[in-house]
Image (tube, rainbow, N blue to C red):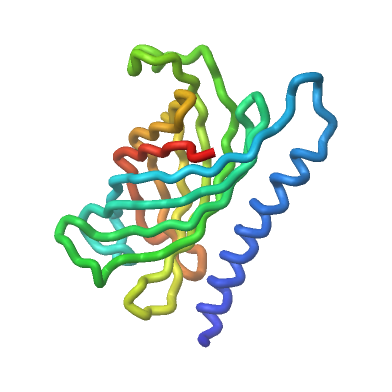
Length: 189
């Protein structure tokens, strides 16, 4: 194992541990009456693309399974297992598996995007980090920092539109950009 790969894996472990430790500490803080938290489990499908040599040119289909904790105001943290597969051009050999951590910054009932859905929605912006490893055996991780300012919660899940991201190499140096065109996630619990 090279030193660079060990640094990349150490950064991934630190990110996952930070997210895992954030949820219990948030739950342990004193709460106002009726401000209890809840556990959630959800799956998501997405379409995204990257402008980075680490991912290659083209579109990727994403699939993820996430578990998290959220309080009544919508603030929360979660961990996810992810899979990205190139679909344009299709190349299953270029697929990547990853782990991610996200922080939901709240849930806002009054927001300027309410017109986008016939259902009642809440704006629930989030930030996150994910580490990916190619399934073809290459062992240099790549990281994606993302922001989801347009993330709508509708009671059954989330819809993300136009989420920008920053691609980082194994040394955590900027190595490109990404854009998640959309993500639909559905709550299982």
